[in-house]
Image 1 (tube, rainbow, N blue to C red):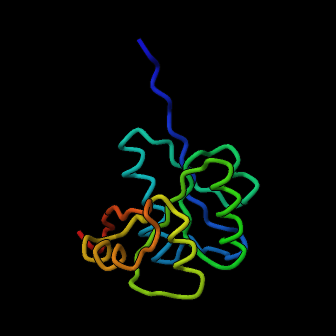
Image 2 (cartoon, one colour; image 1 turned 90 degrees about the vertical axis):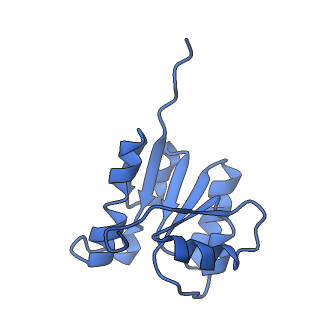
Image 3 (cartoon, rainbow, N blue to C red; image 1 turned 45 degrees about the horizontal axis):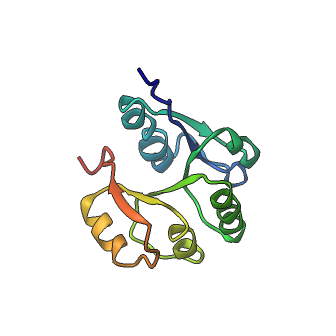
Length: 136
């Protein structure tokens, strides 16, 4: 009988952004993403340092800037699956570049997934939904 491989999943909260665990966006969305992932048998950990991502094949990002675009290119070359936690219908600098480097955009609602999918230019990026507490 073949052994199933445990999925190690990083939820990357880059330390340079000083994410505050008491912030509603962090507390209600980003930290709570671990629960549905773990219920699926996915070992999801919060990671703060880019250097610590080497142990993970699946990485969810939560922010975008020029440095993260460059890091996404490196992570893709390393064969990592990239995800982005998307909870607001905004389009800011570097957001589209990061989104189109990801395999999946994880949206907080079906409506946000619909609005986001039409703006993606990558043939492989797909939107999926993990609703947050506010949406349900």
